[in-house]
Image 1: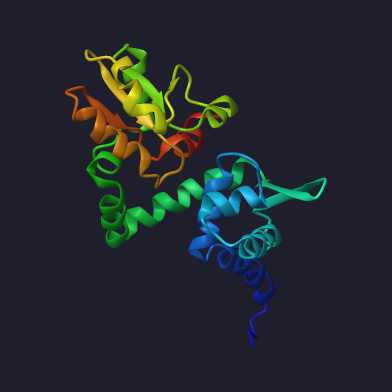
Image 2 (image 1 turned 180 degrees about the horizontal axis):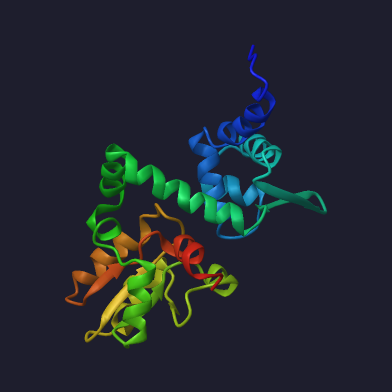
Length: 216
């Protein structure tokens, strides 16, 4: 039992911390930062059992982080607002700045192409502004249609090998995928670089770019 007068306030604050205290729920929030999804879509994209996905989403909704709506027999979930997206970005940055083992794990997971060697949103704007980069969106055609970095061309990752000849030789190719820890763009960068072209990843993918630069 807590016996200080401010205890009820801190108990409410702790509800947000509790909602964020599961890796699965953090992953679901990053997925929802890409756009509204049904429970079924989230379960498939997250590689999770449907029942568990629904339970985690209900906890996120109880903490005021997501909203839901029913359409027929399906429930659709979305981040509550843009403030949640910005909060997630600050939270991830804060954790990486203070936890060396987290930084090491991110670099191990993404490789240098997706970690320390990646282009930031600010660097991308500068490269595009002087015509020194071609931006490639590796997500699906549907995701591209829902929103993308201005000026990007759509080359879904599954089509990259057969379309690699379309990419230029004389300028830097900046490729991006979905969320901040997506491995698709680092792998694509390695593939493109192996052809003799110059390629780099966009740090944090579309989600991080959207958090820093707008809605696309």
